[in-house]
Image (cartoon, rainbow over all chains, first blue to last red; front, top):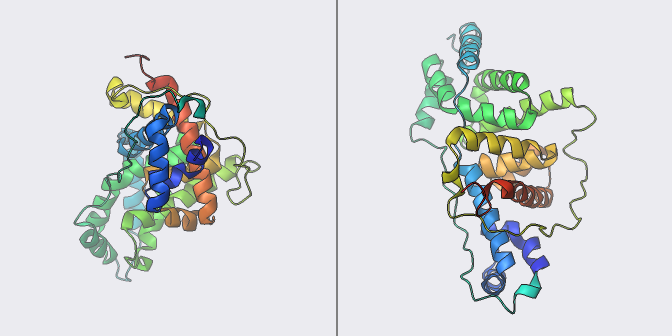
Length: 85
Length: 217
């Protein structure tokens, strides 16, 4: 397995969507190739940083406009199952 | 990179592990049921739970604050109007994300009509071999405050072309499955995988400048 093959299989490897034989081949390569290991490691960290990041609080004016718009519209509408709210 | 393989010491391979889900709460189905029967405070609780995430999603896709705010408002209003059609076959949040991504994409297409076509064939086959191979420090997230880190992440994802950043947003930030992402965007599963790989590699490269070992540490 070459470095190019690692890149081609990277998404499925990170998503644990590979069969055990292919996974073992990749891990054997990673054990011997520092560059590929760094790429895989930093790619995994990239996903984790985005996945774990907390969204910033809503700006107060944005939140106020959202809730005003919701209340204005929702109070005029029937409820989703047909009853008047 | 193979040239390194003979001389490098034996290293433990990087083992992936499932990413944590930060989305689902136990009382969600009860809140949805109450909201369906017209309980506005229950719906407001759902809004309060997800407004930050939906705003970030809309902001990341539209790259425009006014459009993001409009898309968020319209998403929650549409969600309420169509709540009766939500059958509970997926997570409520997944259903909400699908509404929000459509609203955000409409805004983006309105602003950039000639640029955004998600279903066109994209050339993702060019050389994807990383050019920069530098290790990061042990905990890049600790180097920056939360606000600063949010700014960095928002900046680098905004630098991706829309077809790539939308796929990354749904798959890796909102944690939709590959199949859910494909369905939400009207793409094939191979197209999602190909765009996701490109997006991940591009973002990794862009984050290198902030997180590489020795940088700002």
